Image (cartoon, rainbow, N blue to C red; front, side):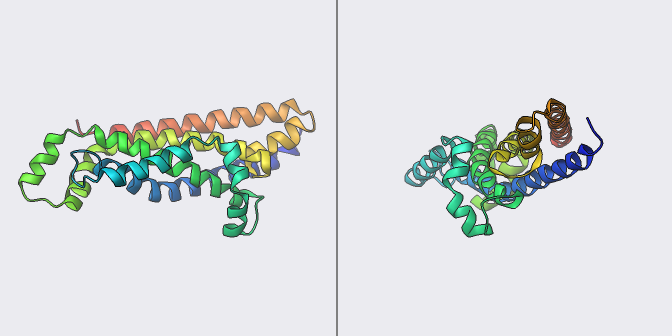
Length: 217
């Protein structure tokens, strides 16, 4: 691979990290409360509301059922409205966030379901409010599992950020398409694949390490 590609690879990697980091931060802020709401409004839970739970669940399932490449194209008007453009790294973060929020919500819901209900009952018997139970019981007890689930979401975001290159989203996917595919540069294609593999391995290692550190069992 020629030396002139190294700056392009470095820039593309930076764009990918930027897309994934910012999208994950925003999606986590929105997705974790969504997951808490999905769990706590379920049958027999502390904020039981089956109608609300089913309505939220239906919306979450609907968004999750849309393939990412279709979602990116379908919300182009919304992306233009929010960031002023449908092309570029910042624009790509809009569909990344929308796709990740329901995914995180379901993952967090799954983690919270693993918390023994006996612990919640003990907190209720001591007069704890639902908010106190969420902050002091459910989230701390489920945190190792939540971290592991969020790691899975980050890895999915890395793959989706590469897919965003198909519509000019920037990053490693855009570089692979413009140079590796359209200009018949297999060396560039190979380099982007290797970088993505290394990035995923680093994310998985960091997530596993943090989850083990938080696991007090």
